[in-house]
Amino acid sequence: MDVINLDELQPLARQKLDPMAYDYIASGAEDEWTLRENKDAYRRIKLRPRVLVDVSKQDLSTEVLGARVELPVMLAPVAMHQLACPQGELASARAAGALGALLVLSTLSSCSLEEVAQATSAPRWFQLYCFKDREVTKTLVQRAQANGYKALVVTVDAPKLGRREADIRNQFHLPPGVVLKNLEGLTVPDVPEELHASALAAYAASMLDSSLNWASIEWLRSLTSLPIVLKGIHTAQDAKLSVEHGVAGIIVSNHGGRQLDGVPATIEILPEVVEAVGGQLEILVDGGVRRGTDVLKALALGARAVLIGRPYIWGLALNGEAGVKRVLSMLKEELALAMALAGCPTLADIQRELVVLPSA
Image 1 (cartoon, rainbow, N blue to C red):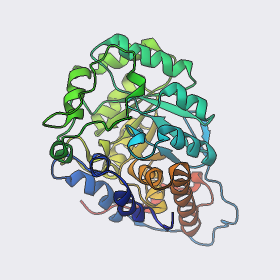
Image 2: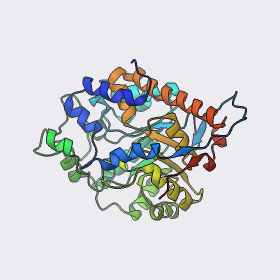
Image 3: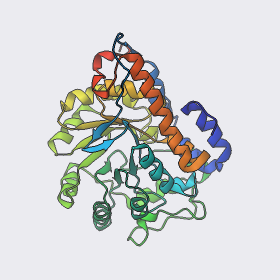
């Protein structure tokens, strides 16, 4: 995989992937304004490095909800990795383990949570969609806890799926051999073969609980001792409610620009969320991270770590497990260099004063 930065991955992956699979992974909602903003907003943030700091020894490790990781970059939950590689989530999990990173497995994965647990000893979390049938949700929670997943990541910004016009145009459907392994044997509707619109959106509407509310979070907490992380927080108000309802962490996320188009970039939302929670829970951020300097900026603005999605799937498509390792390695190398040039030998040295936000 002859690339030197993450932006070079996508056009190469596009050449290799089935067009429908590529569009499913790459596209955002409606005009894709938020999809673009997630990345572009990082470019508007400036860095103010310190000098004459001893950076001869560096440490990029940290803890995320008590789990020790070797770098502050996590693999975000992405559905159906087998759209990109036959080994699917198993390859991604092994790559995460090799680099000391943390994997968040999607409910809609193409390998089961049990198979992934057997594939790696790396720390891993389970991303949970809440189903209309609460017994299905309860079963998934119990399986995740029994198989060593260390947290539940509850997606809260998808009461319905956003309008992803590429999927509608392609009449998206699962290709032969790709199934939603975590849902096999459960009382959920069968995945439709093909529809005259986005099959995934129609399927989600038939099974996901659009009545999800804060009381539902209390119910989930009653099911498990696992810490709960809410993915999809956009505002200070919801960040404060997250604290009030006893969740352990939040992911500032707009679903990679795939839900409500027109919302701000996540890095722009991050400062108000950090201020709102006042250190009472851990904050993560995803969306648009493509450079080590992006990671540096997010950490300076108060994130414990960042999550990446599309970049590692492009690496998976191009070279399987080795491709995902390469993506994580590139970000780690870039972050180490950026920290050294900014005068930050450790993650604890990355302070708010390092960044200058654009004028409102």
